[in-house]
Image 1 (cartoon, helix red, strand yellow):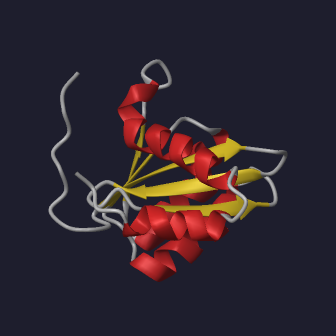
Image 2 (cartoon, rainbow, N blue to C red; image 1 turned 30 degrees about the vertical axis):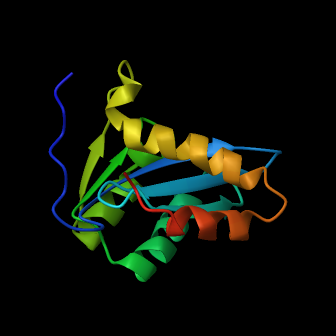
Length: 134
């Protein structure tokens, strides 16, 4: 596997993935530079829901230069391609036969699931974000 070059600043490159826990679906967005994550509950897995969640995330952090996602239908739609064009970010879809190429997001999903299982996910996320990355 060829290692990817580390971004030079926060929110230059981010990864995103969807996951389900205890019924509802969530989207996780991970910054490749700081490893900080954002978690947003989704009403469903539709492209519109994913775009709304990403707009909310981007309004807090700014639009990244690059977004890496898996091969989920919501990320492959024409609507999502238009969203990427309108927001002027590069959208990279990882290979369906090699999901490790979206490893940052896969790791973020594991962390997000642990956070969402806590009695106070907001507090747990705050503590996670306050912990320095080695």
